[in-house]
Length: 271
Length: 143
Image (cartoon, rainbow over all chains, first blue to last red; front, side, top):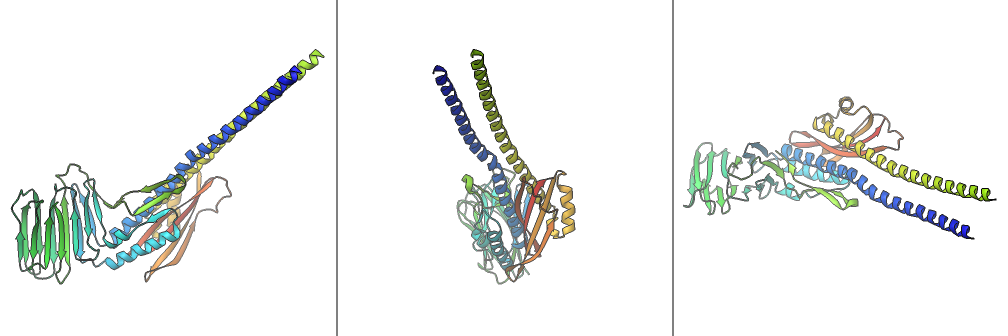
């Protein structure tokens, strides 16, 4: 009788041990699966994101007609205003969005701003170079601090008859080098301005206007009959963070890892 | 009689010990197997993406030339892996994408339990226009 009880308790303990072991194993495998599958999912998301980033970089650099160079702390953007590449560029963007939605899962694109305003962000200084409308007549530079200088070089195919400078007195902490070459006529001037006030340069009685508004915001608007070639250089040597890079904004691409509640977003490096 | 009972108890203990050890060993095997399989998949996937990215960044894909891509693949792929690549090209004709060519490189996909699959895209340009929009799919497995 006694032995029977001991035997039954022994068997019960053994069964309990097996059950506990099986449960532990199940839980362990589930947690391991998450740990083990997550790197593969992240690898996919990382590569999906960077593949699309490479494509967008190619479209911007080859189809937009905007050239970007980084030389130390000097960032230069060169383009024609109005930009003649607008149709080719916007068609490329539209087709790319369709192509991705048909062929690539887990990648969300929001290319409206890229298509319509084409904004570049210089990081880590956070200076934006953008367009009112891509293909339009106005470009903007929107810095986060006034601790920078500008060089503007413009080439017009029509007569530059006069340049008027409206520079109010102030602290003169921002240097703006300005030159315009017409056919014929030209103006060249290095201006020291106060970035907390509004300063303007008017060409041909306001057919073209260069303005610097409070905060050091630069705008170039051309209403000339013919297009102009515009080279805008940002001199960032005075900024606290050096080694700038030019990127596309971080709100265009999202590679999602829905199974893990994660997503990969980021800036797209251009230069 | 006493000897007989002792024998039964010893046998009982031996069977119990055998059962417990067998279960423990099997559990250990299952857990290890699960880790090995999945980590290998991750390594393969990572290698596949590295190779595809390299062929893209070196411009091999952009040639859309099967033999050139195959040569580059042979140079880039580690010896213990096999990889099949399919490139589907779509051409921009008047603002609409049409399927143009399909390039397939590499051996038939092995009927292996341990294989994985990935994708990337690339573009080719004619002047300022994106001429072709290309989808690369790869399958990679251990030889």
